[in-house]
Image 1 (cartoon, rainbow, N blue to C red):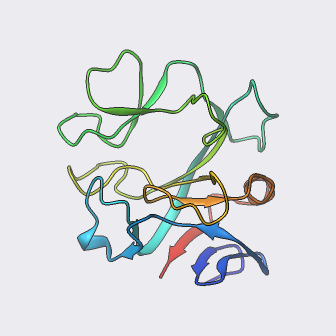
Image 2 (cartoon, one colour; image 1 turned 60 degrees about the vertical axis):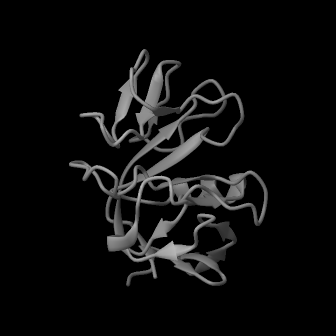
Image 3 (tube, helix red, strand yellow; image 1 turned 90 degrees about the vertical axis):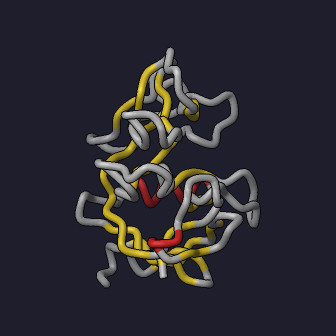
Length: 166
């Protein structure tokens, strides 16, 4: 592992010689081969960082490579959808998550390559890094941070940064 890796530990996420409190999925950490859609688990493994999304109506662009989240942007979480585990646009006739939420949960989203770009149906959709609802409150499988910590991390990651979940 390298200092620029985001390493999930029992004490939080280690990154650039700092440790940040975080929350993980309500289902705990599971091996990648046991990860399933809707299980609430965070998959173990080494996951590349493949993108960043942000709400331009709520924050400044955090990096030059971050992409804005528009009003019609969704994420498909339906294993029967040909666009499963991809960003799609409304209207969309399959199960999905709104990326432009009323709450601030997805104001800044860092994308991992979990089950992407060629998703295996049912293996679980996106593992994002996003802000937490509150400290200690679990996610649906993502890794979540205090909003200020997430922004600090977002400004320093690169495409060489990996999310390492043990």
